[in-house]
Length: 159
Image 1 (cartoon, helix red, strand yellow):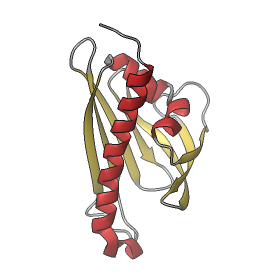
Image 2 (cartoon, rainbow, N blue to C red; image 1 turned 120 degrees about the vertical axis):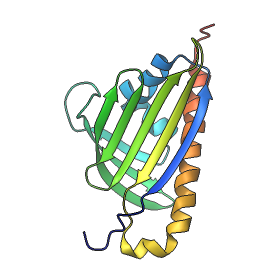
Image 3 (tube, rainbow, N blue to C red; image 1 turned 180 degrees about the vertical axis):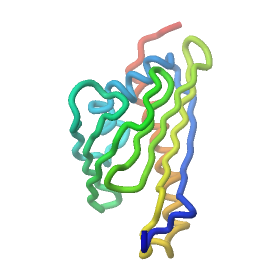
């Protein structure tokens, strides 16, 4: 596609250890996506599921975000749904991917790794690629910190 910078996606990746069992974290991120996504990502101003039933493989959602004063609307689809372990969204209307991997460390602790990929940049954004990379990395780190804070604040003592 003309005007897109496809060869060099912008990727941010961050991990965090959360004091919670992996199934509880998966419930928080995947099953309760519509409730919790705007909590861990306050830039999300509107979120609606466009498909029927629970969040699962193939679920389509629409979101409206305000990032650094810029309003954007996008549609995304659940591309990977591995119960208790992983959920991945891919932009339908925009070229991005959000991947959440949850790994049990022990009965009470888990690691969450979040990867955000901006799969292409418009031509007019290319001169600012370094700033975009910094913002994407900062955003992934903030996302895992927010998820950790919310889950640990709400958690029941599992030990």
